[in-house]
Length: 312
Image 1: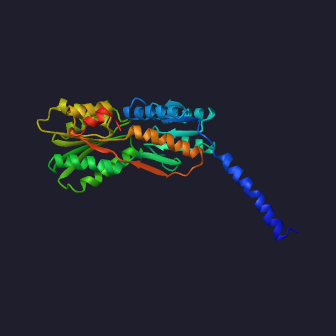
Image 2 (image 1 turned 90 degrees about the vertical axis):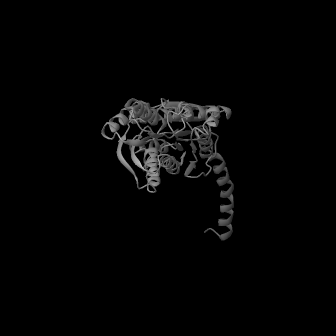
Image 3 (image 1 turned 180 degrees about the vertical axis):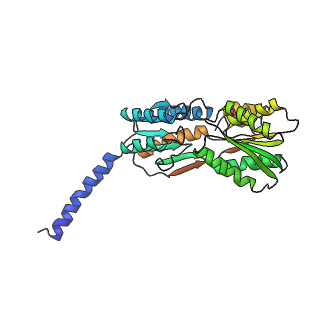
């Protein structure tokens, strides 16, 4: 029979072993997988460049894959990354369809997941790093509504339906418009991939049905640039205020030139570095917040020069 003394001695013997176990479980990140939605988009490309540059500073290898906007391709790519013995996965879902699969696959293999910009509904990463799109979109739509005098017909060119940014930017803009009962949203269409040519075509279609539109919210800068192009072609004979979102490099220059009117500049460089730091901490078994939302800056012709010179 074990005495109280022998039980205490046994427990004391286990404590150092537990300490050794904890020490063994903490490790350094040496290789990261970076699964990007679509490198044709400047926004994602900036995050990629930031992740790779910052990881290099820290002596960490990064294996990057580009899904080119296709969820099925991304599932296969992440499965391949896992076979390459990555220590953590930085993951930007290519769409809402099948977005949970890479997260579940990585976690089943014991690999921590850092989601950037988009989260997988029902299977979130260990941490989610993104812009506070609700608040930022609210600011953008409030600004454009004020510029239009608080009245008029409005159309919205949405991003990829069901993705985190599309949902949040819709919500934020909707919150802003509650304060402007004389602004009527007369048309909304959804893009497949946030592309400029989609912004042009979707806006062109809506302007044919609603020629009196005076406000357009493109939920990405590429969509806004396409919308501005469609307005120019339509030549409606009145001012049409165009808003975007992202702070893409080319779009910021277009904003300076008066091609469109306002955007929200996201901290792409900062998010990339934060993603690497989060991956390092997760690999080392450190606790980090489940959500890390960053501020975007309302950007107009008046303050755009600073972001052209140095993107945040």
